[in-house]
Length: 535
Image 1 (cartoon, rainbow, N blue to C red):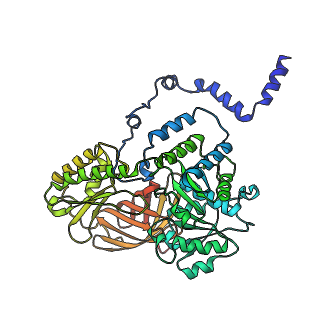
Image 2: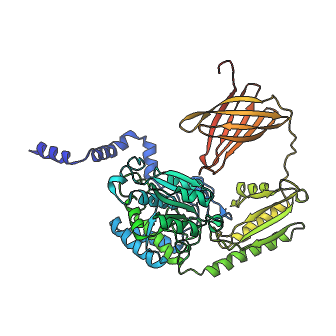
Image 3: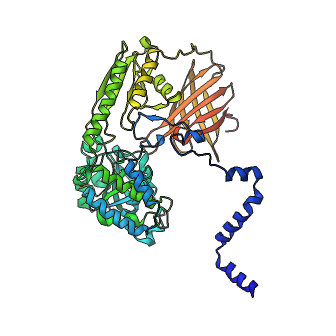
């Protein structure tokens, strides 16, 4: 009888639950005693100001702006409190999003609102809404759009960018247009949506948002505006200009959760975008937004309409003024503050200029020193003129905290008055002439690829082209003795951006070293001079 009851109980457990329970029971036996003891002790992560240092990560002062790679912005205290409170109860997410959508509509004056897992996710969900309309039969087929009535998205050339990958992720075919005539001809029965990247180019010229929206409305095509880095205008400027939908980042000027975004606009499409969002299953399941992010993002918008934006602006100006006065005391250094009127990354900035030969250091060197040494400071980067000796650096106060302006000012003053002395460098004679075709083997984190370099060397300079897996781009580089550096860059003309920087050692027939791919991190590479006998 006991055995029968036990058997029936086990059958009710899922395979996943059985595996989980069995694994937990076996864990102490499988792990070394010291490891088990360490796991049972105090955590290595220390809550507080040193939380990142406790795991060996160096925090930084953000004098650069709301860039995701340096973690965007810091959340407002009210946002943190809302997320903490939201984390302590359960709710049904469909019910939550209905309530959040209605409240966002009240706050922003849009028809409806949606919290997404970042602005890119908002773009993806909006595209899916325009393609599939909330139809689950279609939803589960995305990104395979075979048989869909609408599967094309029109994008003006001025709006092609790395972020339109979020639109392409749905599986749509991009139709790129450069003139009003091309736009008129691009509309057809398969057109699902138009995508526009907000910015000066979308505000001016024949393909501005208002002109596009007027034509799109006549064709019955919705218009999505990507305003990720912009300030939130109420009533919304893009919706006022005729756009159907507009997407924002939550972790930039709104200072909401870094992993949240906003989609605002026509109610039926925003609600359909939620159908195509996680936690609903299908292609977008990975773009999950939790109750904590939903309430944190809503609180960020609540605070946006209450914040004293004029006082914030004046505070940023006061910080820049302090830095400006400090560095301007150095003979030969000038500083000027710019107050832009645009919507994107709307913040004053400080431009600091000097003569490189007079001070003995360039803007790029200053930016590198600020980032590499302590206290660590991220800036928009230094600027060195191609001709002449003028150089400089800029400071963005947007995401700085009170008191950090003094640290930035002191660091800049120290670097400009007592710059580190670089070692004298003279290029050595090239160890080989690298002119010709080279077959390159690249070893990525978990894969490999074959590329080709076509090089032409003149002295220590190298020029040529780099053929990748799909596209070719120009390259340039140098050879110093047997040390070689070759760089290529593929722009955003097709909505992508790739940067490859090969460094290493070279001989007459072989090269090898490290490959820096920017945001795609690093790899290893080897190259051999092409053997034309083998084709």
